[in-house]
Image (tube, rainbow over all chains, first blue to last red; front, side, top):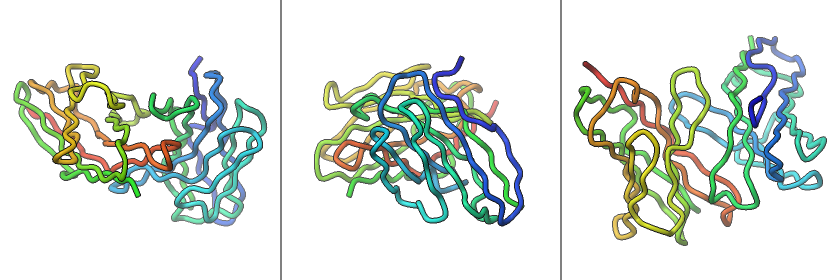
Length: 113
Length: 113
């Protein structure tokens, strides 16, 4: 099994629908992150969490919300999806310091039509 | 604020020739720097990392990078390109007091016969 698992792998949804992307990890890491990737823009941070009681906004949090249900689970929600939220979404985890880098999930490709 | 600039959005080389992917960083303190690779339709894989130890860092698959403080650079090199190196490469810097990673916009490497 993968260390960081994202579900679903692919999703097509309609404008205005609520959708949740899920992430679970077996690394035992406290820190979890959600990024989105767009062509030519690299990865941009949406939200991050350092433990179950700590949630922080990233650089592009508008239109998104998150829930840290447990140390191992971190979900990203789009309350009312819009087409410009079409992107590849990555969940990542890290140890107490990012100096060892992140462990990434395989990504969720979301299309909003 | 800490940031990275990848100087080329696309690089094309012939198989067997050297690879150079350029990255400059901006940081008010000594940063941790990383290179990640993303093969088509795949997740992100850590190639190598610099965390204030040796300035020449060796990574996987024959890649290496040199941290040059005087030039604020962290360029990625490989002596001889292989077709399997064709991918997108991201230069990444630790930010937020070392609590998260900020990605460059990526360099697409094409390897031709």
